[in-house]
Image (cartoon, rainbow, N blue to C red; front, side, top):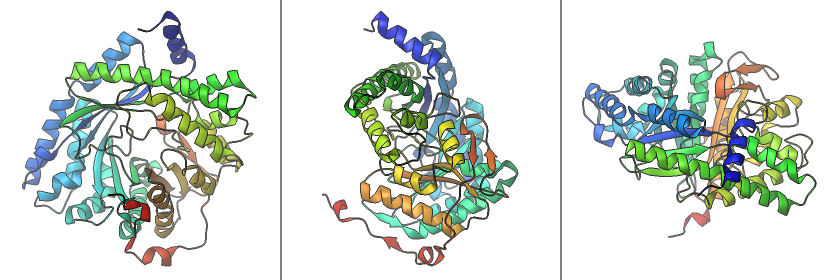
Length: 452
């Protein structure tokens, strides 16, 4: 039972500190939609999504109205399409993306994820077809998000897939050049991708999941920032305890919304993802939390240590507040979606190399980073390989969402609007990694992968 004081605290967090539920995401299995006829398969995909998720937005809005809790996004994730389309007699996978987009528009959701392939150890013909279709698929659809998993702790890193994804990112940017390379904002490359992530662009419904589930992603960087203002100058033990208590309150709200949505939609509750997800709004920034700990600017020396404390404390506090915690759970550091990160990058203190170091201790990786439009595919692949290596060796999820902005150079800004914000174009190293990427093959899994 909530006390009067807890209710008032929650209301204050919502009204003054940008607390919200970032997303309710319904995961839907499309395995039953497989059909040799691609048109029949697309029809089944559209019909099943619309049948399962027809009330998702309505229920989300009901919960918002009744509880006064903002729910920013209502989304859908589906079985990786490469698995569903594998039995179809077609070379063109773009119609599957179009079917997903139509379903998303019919249901009224913000995004639909799962135009995906899992190729950490090798590629099937279906995987190859889907990956080749990504640039066109993301160009002709509005709400479809795509992801490709190229490595894991158990399998190592599939470097042929890494090389291919550098090319695909370049092609996607060129295919959506009229929108600043916007297609790349809907494409993420993973190592150790998880099956229950509710956040886009990397959400997909794993094969180990139920027929359909409700996953909720909470947010609240502004709440954590506000809480830390009350412990200025105090030891890190106090900082950690403050973050833990705050994360507990945030996650309790997510648990409440998840249970309520699950009951009303007659769909099993999956997980609550604890991730602190920033927005471009002032006061809703992970970078500002790190600076509140005593850093002059995010990206300076000490930033990785501060982020490690934050990520750990969020997980420790949140895991006690929900019966099922999953997804990514930690702190996102997307440059374009965090006003503090944008300011730090523009000042030159926050660099791509420092961001890579920060990803060793947080969720998820190099996220929403704009780089010069003339960056080579090999350089993009090398950045992906570095980030996948961090995930593989540390047994954690890492990801890369890069935007080689067509026609843009270092110092320019790329505008995406909404939650995607705007990104300063950041420099990359000019020394070539082309010969490294051209080797292909697989980087073997680390020794600690042998844990059976």
